[in-house]
Image 1 (cartoon, rainbow, N blue to C red):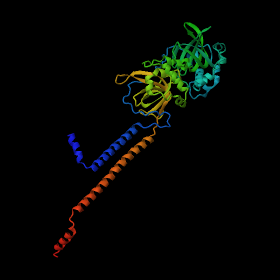
Image 2 (image 1 turned 60 degrees about the vertical axis):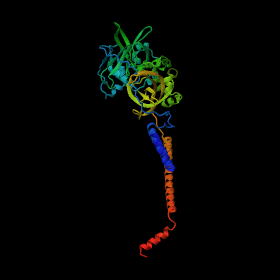
Image 3 (image 1 turned 90 degrees about the horizontal axis):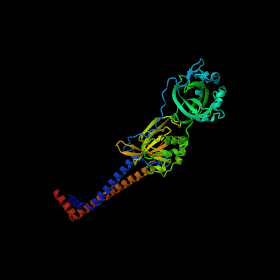
Image 4 (image 1 turned 120 degrees about the vertical axis):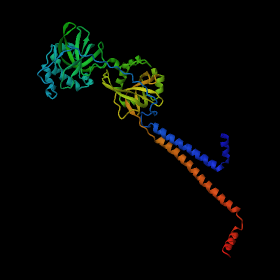
Length: 467
């Protein structure tokens, strides 16, 4: 059958074959141009001015059925009856949110020491002061010349003063203090022991909570001295200074890069210290500085192939958002929330990310870039029950990758122009061919006509008229 069809080709005139071939070429060119248009619409081209542009990504073919490795928060222990000092109510204002006297420093002069309760008005006053300051403000305003001994000797002189204490946390609880003008009715309350001669037991209220600190951890604390509290500790009556603070100081390991050495490459473990270390670094680095610090020679495939060598590197990953979630997790960095999710690029490489800042103007399937610190390759099981890996990157935020299709449009216009030219040439060839055929047919007709045809026509006409 094929031979028969091929044999029919020789019966097609040469000019018609040329026209047919031109039409076929035009058809191929048009199909190719349409394909390029569709691909351009799907992919786009990264703008040269966009510092995040690397290579475009498409929607992932298969989304991993896994969350980023969660950093498990430490839950506060439940309130125990009788735990912590009683909150003494007084005739002084303090519970009404519209009474300005609660913010009067003169309140501190009325607070007693060596009692079994804590004056609520004094606690609320200091809590209000804490709410108006950052941790850096508190540390900068601390009087480091005041020691714990001084609080015992002259409590009234140092009441309401920012002081420093450190020790081993022995107890942590939540404490309900009742409704008050600050809007905070529950605080973290705890004890810490400071070894020495003598050994001090120091108590504290925390506005932000323990942020991952557990009993047995060594901590530093900057806060306002409230009063001396008389209580029973281990069967013996004792007196402890109470400090009202925002939070513990960040632990030393939070700024120690050696925590990255404890990360297990490719493992299922959740190395919270390394992630918190990276978050802390991100908080101290501006987005512009992050972009500058990125090693642009490192590709997503390099992270998966050489994770141990690249750990701690500042890298960039561009991909489509497959998931984005807000995570509430008070932690040593001071953040109470951050954002997690994953990206997938056109090579089907996956990035699990942690970002400290809420991303703006992005949604699922958008093409974005993350600039941040590479931690490890995390092993997980995807929705097809296959064990696979994803690169963990900690950054500031997700940056939309804008596209500039001008070069693509130029290419498409060029292809379409070529297709038009091919069609135009085919049309011109067809017109010329038709003219030549008509001319040849006319000449052939005249060449075959008798030489005396005109005279015979006249003679026939006379006869018809009876002449």
